[in-house]
Image (cartoon, rainbow, N blue to C red):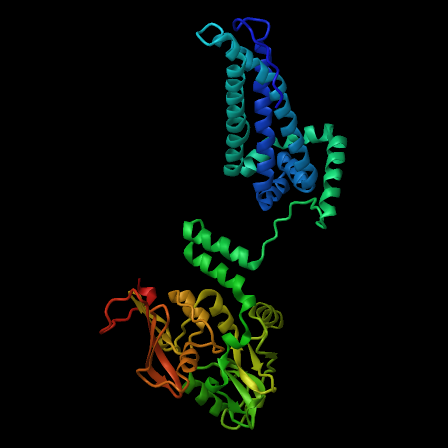
Length: 459
């Protein structure tokens, strides 16, 4: 700022002007207004501004117009801030220096030191007021109430930009030339586009702070992560599939369904690598299919789509809903059957385990203080969400497979693996050649002993 000394004998002398002080106060307020407008437009959530504009709020319409030409808008704010700062230096600072000089000249201060001390005090006061009132206070206000401040200042700030638009556009164009000189393309519109990962972080933080219900936060986070989960991760593996041959009678299919607890059964020719369709037990029970002892499953056979194991669940769910398919066949790279994904499997990725009358309670994750008992087929990412344990390295998707990789052999009951950070995984039982249940114990868990297990739903 430039300083013009006008030392006076007292406050009523020729060097001091209350008019200059008043102009300085106005410039200080205007400076704060430009700062608030700039920060508010930067911090405002565009979705809220658009909602208000669609509801008929004219202030929001003006604010939205400013957001659509962000480069010009911010250039206008910077021009206003610069003009106010220069005005403070040219008008208010000399007046304040004169006021201090008048006071100091009446005291014991040597006459030669009065101008210097007056200038230092004037600079201190004006810079302090400029920083606090003209910069920091409006900035903090705009951050705390971004949309409200943007709406209040939209019209006066828009008028300022309209009046000085030719100058603003000229200065902004020159600045854009410098930006392009370093191979960066200027942006004219404020586009709030976030990746799924960024949205997941926002949802997680909102859930932690209580602005979103914990259950809602979990569902939204899971939905955002669907694109990162493959069909192979969510499928019922081939080894666990229960199917019926294509020549089986409807009565035989009903027996298989009653024994397995599955209401949808793949139908195969020769073996499960040659699945030809799917049957729904409901079609047998309520349909006009004749004698179950003589009619074959061909009577109620439905086509079943096939997808590769790499298909992500987000697009798969969309296709299943559009095609009204309740199950799809997952095939491996050799064209053989890898597993089956049902609509229930996909929904469980969103809302968690869905138990029906056929599900075994023992296959649900259970926990007590810092100790979890999970099925061996539990995926590594599911275990991380449940307990916080991230199983690094390895190609296996399941907890049982991960332990098998670490051991270098098939698992046995009682096998234990301790991770580098102190987590303990213990195989409690077997289901064929894989772990049936695995106890996961955190480093903070109490001393190992008899571990009572409880369903998380109970508390």
